[in-house]
Image (cartoon, rainbow, N blue to C red):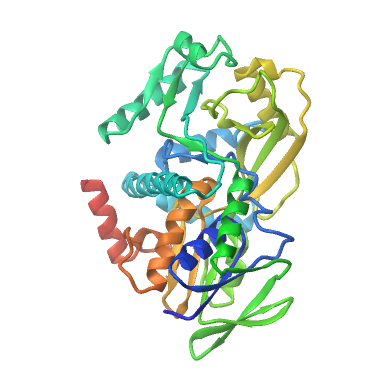
Length: 431
């Protein structure tokens, strides 16, 4: 594939794709329906650039935990039962076997580690992404979460990666703003974080300097096909032609893919954040509160508390119970936040595939159409890696990672998985 590339979506997936393509000399146009880039879920996440907790959404343990959490209105997970969710849930159950979860976990570990390396490199090359590399902490309120943290650190050590379990005294010495009643914690010194909005806007500026055209307030309504190929995007600004098209529109990717006959089982995993003014109560590095699944991230001038995972379709309503639960978790772990008034609330829909892996690559029936979505809660970390993969495919190069487990069409059938995909899972289990 060569010629003009049209990227649909101005979030982290779309902008990193445009940047990576332009670095290699491609002519790229990005179409974004909002006023600017990073105005949906890409800007409101926790900003963690992390290879820790690289666990797939679908696994036997996650399935059990999800069922347990369903009946608690303030839990980190919520599923609103509805008929439209049945196909997604059936595929989720199918992906939750030990073998498939192990294969997905192995791939996610590679993606997140490569993503961390990518962020370090572009920062070292002089791109002002605001990356901070002091590491991050886990905070354990219970003995159960402490033991789970111990097991994760042992797994990281087996892969040659750093991780240090801390007793309460060591934890408080490192981060005095934490509660003295914690059971313990963990330090991951090789991790990083950033303000996601600053990062994406900086990357968009760099992409523009490389010749990328970013067209805001342009919504793609349909894809025009001729001779088995996409020849143009029909938009609110008229017909926009190109040689190669990439759908990177988050949860909205499923609608555009459907026009080509491809079923993309992407559900919106709603997340929230609460922001408070920066103060002495703010930690000096991100803190992951393992029991509540809430992250406290220090950002320029403010502290962001992020959490919850609601499978609720495309419903963007704010649930006050979730906001209160996030705030309460923050106060328990960072007691200096008690009485501090929030300065901002946010919610966004993270695109989630049933097996927790991104949907990345070309569509077989439409050779000049590619997809990059389904990054879930890890788009800031894994988005740049899938952007590299998309670029390699477009240029006809050998992908730097096997892409079988991420193929966009892997969910066509509920009955059987493609033979090659089963072989890849077998290799992961054996490894």
